[in-house]
Image (cartoon, rainbow, N blue to C red; front, side, top):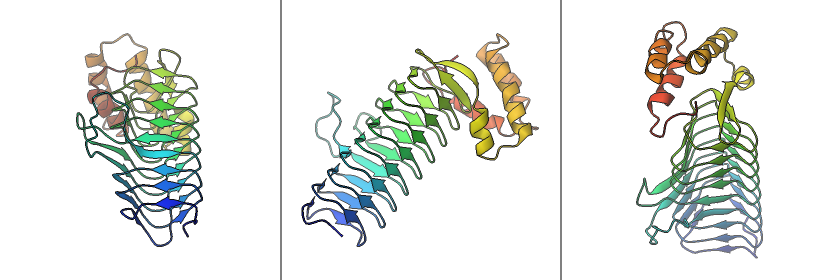
Length: 256
């Protein structure tokens, strides 16, 4: 199932049913799991580990070394989970020894055309990176987050679970869970109501998360006092804990 015009290094390991299109290059120390499809003109460099059921489209470069000037060709890694769709022209870089030494992408993600995932980034599960999203190094993206087209994320930022960015958003601080942001620089606008409905959150939970948003963003409270008030909601709305945890995990400060 490997096209005769593909180049696959002898030190790469591919499951028996992996499909590789013409003019693709798979280098040494690359592992590709079952049911993966690698279209034509794809470059995959190692050390890279790719799970099962992934589909990588033409002209993508996966597992390339980072252009970070501190990088000195150390053997860092890229790890990709299962059932990810990586569309045309995507670039994904391996990690650096100055951080975790690996870039990690979870399961069931859609990474659309010409998106970039920088070194040492960690992408959760079920995320969508729309066309031309650019993540600098060390970025963390939580589960079910959606970043609209041309969103830019500064290094070391954290994007909370179930959050949403509008198109052309420039994110320079952490985005808490559930929050919709837009603008340059990014500003918090509201709770990601439509996304939560699609994922089966109850009307009551969504209503309470809207209340949590008002406490955090509309009552002119200090962050410490806002967090104290959010904690009083936990008994009735356990979903608020994800919001609180995302704020407490912030090191750069949150979009506010």
